[in-house]
Length: 140
Image 1 (tube, one colour):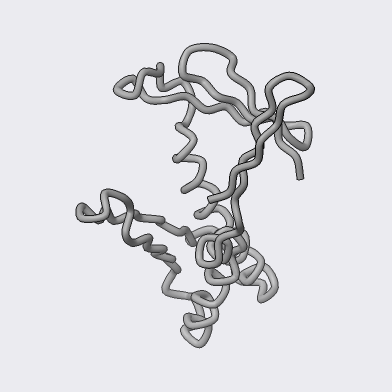
Image 2: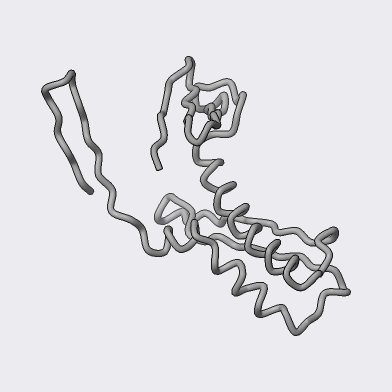
């Protein structure tokens, strides 16, 4: 997968890939206009919707209606680390949901590929090119 990141102005940073353009902007207190979600917001959206697709497929395979089902993703700040220390997925199901599947719903959320990548992160490298002749690669 390849993604092209561009800078259309202000504090906006956009990503183009697979024929889509994903817009981002910083909130006003971060120097932007708040015209689009911030990049870190997309991170949380990615995590929540990834879990959601696994729950959706689980329900569809069992012909269980999705009308009254939703997931609330909540983040819990760790002041000591100065970053999010815990992420909670609250899967809300109607009374008609078969209780025998409650543990299976947890397993469905745990299948999320985004969550798996966070728990076992890939290696990161940054390649800096200046003109056609100068390049340097850096790894964390």
